[in-house]
Image (cartoon, rainbow, N blue to C red):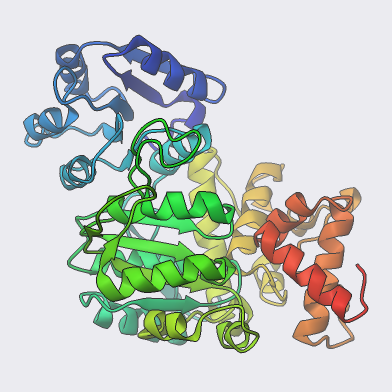
Length: 461
């Protein structure tokens, strides 16, 4: 299966309603060719047993298209097809049940194109469990690539100690605050904690607090009742309810508005939420993990984040070191990403002599995410059997990875480096803040805040 290109993966779309099948087909048809539409649950069950499809995307219907019963019935049949289940609208119980029965993801209604596409790609590009030996000049490094794309690959003693600490607290319900620069792998660590906890069979729900405006974020977190506001045509469950008996990740928590911070504090204190337009509180059992790439103590001191909420979230503090502080991981990660993308793009490549040693000298302000993107680019552009520095840097096109020490004879402070990289990203994107933020691995809101801070200092980039 791993040798099949992503576009050629075989996908079943199963739903009782024709408009639902066509809706999903329209979303996938631009990027996937082998789509089979199934209107009957019995026919779906029969086709699934053939193990010819990599993914089944199904709309659950309790009466006529019950995916929970289907998953229960195929438990002992060695079915290799993976499942993405769409709720209509979707309840906490349904989400919990399908995840426990082996479905890879559950998306409640209303369904969004980007959410479905991201989930499909995540499922289809997932890696399997295997052991690989990575050779270097001094010794043999044995790296265990664990199952799924959410595992952390490292040989760094600092990271090993961090993972040990994370695992030791995973089974508690204590809130965790993960700090670290953009691209260090904060969400990966959050998923690791969830997987090592006694909630591993429950849902893991991630929310980017910087991606939505305040009005939408409140509804996204806590849900709403029908008629709660203009456009609320039906009840919608919030992320906290969907994460019940599992874990919720509040990514970029420092970007949350003060009014929402107060409501979140109450949720943490009382273990209950209020839907917008609701009449009574709803009890929940959710483990909260929050992340930030900012100095949260400074944000608190500036009056932009509640101190009492900070204390509530910071029960278990974890800080991920930047990639430049664990240089020993660069070779391991570079070879891991090379292997991963070679499988994804059906290529057989290795690094040319000296390339990995050069990678170790780069600053990598975008951290692991930046390294991953650069290696993917190298795998795609390599002309022969080896990835060269030209494949990674492409000087002829004017592209230099953000980590390249372009000022090799001058030491820059982190503050200077930050300004330099933001200016470079804005230059490469012709001032487009959305594209610049994506290049830097930060949210648009974070970039806007940085630029506003520079303007206050009299600096215009």
